[in-house]
Image (tube, rainbow, N blue to C red; front, side):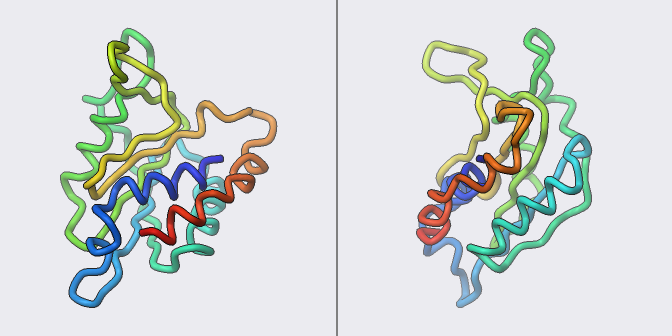
Length: 155
């Protein structure tokens, strides 16, 4: 389920295909795992992305931004994570943050709505979490998201 979400997020992170092709160069997807993310899951997700979009680099794991933590609900604000990821993402790159932590955003009148991922369009970063996936078969759920392919082809 996460790879599909990732590809939809990649599409959300870009401002149409034109922005991922700049100076006759396709954008590079930077997979940014947070330190809580298992390296095997990062590898699995990266492999799935690479099947659809070949320009992928995996970065070293980093800490989740402290300012993104929402103590009242014991989770992280996805919009704050995206802001942090965007601050050092150069033009021509799209950065995808991966976490196992619960993440949330504001949705309508709900201040803290739990989500699996968030990306803005236009944007150059997004975040995805596997927190809301079934604990017993996360990789199986990942591989079932074939709709991701249509999302990445639009990018």
